[in-house]
Amino acid sequence: MTPRVCYGWEGLDYTKAESSLDDNQYMYSVTYLHAIETITRESVDKAVRPMQSEIEQIANWASNENAEFYDWALWMQSKLKMKERPNHVPEDPARRLADPQH
Image (cartoon, rainbow, N blue to C red; front, side, top):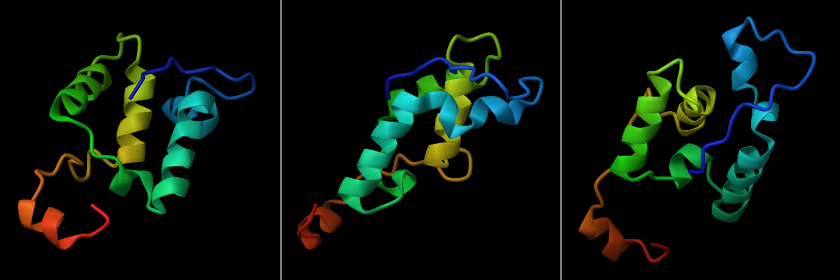
């Protein structure tokens, strides 16, 4: 959850918001996300459960176009599908006992 600034690869049209949401703009962060998916064999939105404080910080950056990590926060929300479904789900103690991999 280390925020990064948008790299700003040459060639993209940065007047379009989606240009700053391209995975290539976060070459360091995307490497970690790919590693997580490879290790867990799950999509990153299922494998990563941010803490409430992380969710709030990302939301704060994503709601402020002038924030240093605005683009990264929007990208991370997209990767973790935070707008459609909050990733932070309270742990169910019964699940922990029933799931041998947990």
